[in-house]
Length: 294
Image (cartoon, rainbow, N blue to C red; front, side):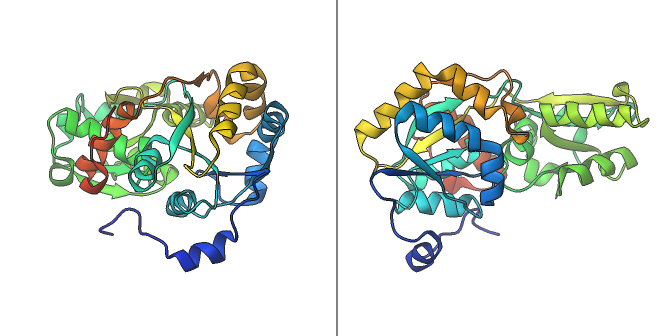
């Protein structure tokens, strides 16, 4: 797959997304979630509070993947998109969308995990070994761990054998010794380690973090350039004045527990995501490594 994100044709977009939203209805997409039922379950209460805070009706727009979200934003088929750092870089490259607000994620950073008994102490010890990573394009499960290797002087695409797989499969492969290490975000690792111990498996001391990256940039709510400035201002004000209510609402979603302890961040700069652009370059996707920082 030479390009990480392939463009969709305008005809496909019209067929998939239909006509642009009416002026009095705001369309919202979330890149991590696919179906309408999942969107409603995770973000239904959040949207209810946001509607009350802004006075605008908000309608979910399900998207099948990151590419679809980017193209929907580009062609004005969706107004706001909640997305992660890696997706933000792509959307900023392909659209003129702006950041409305950041959704902070405490302890959101990538780690490289090994078995303690194997004697690996630093990422450089993994040279020539197999390293399991998550899905291509994931900030904390693919791009982040690759950059950790690079930050320690390795050339990840040449110095290690990267295996892309699902996190549970990578975890089992690590325990069996089929891979020397796995890359994942820290919260996922703690959850896996706790479940392992609770089920009578390996104790926490059986695992070692041999490398970690810096805290990753915030998830962001992006807005398309077609949305009226007064609407954007209304939403920005809502995240300031109704912050506590919106945070409580977003945490009602099970998957959204990753936001526990969060706060909304308003002073985000595009340059905050230059480290993510460096990740793309390291991973072999220089087309998303342009530094726009301001």
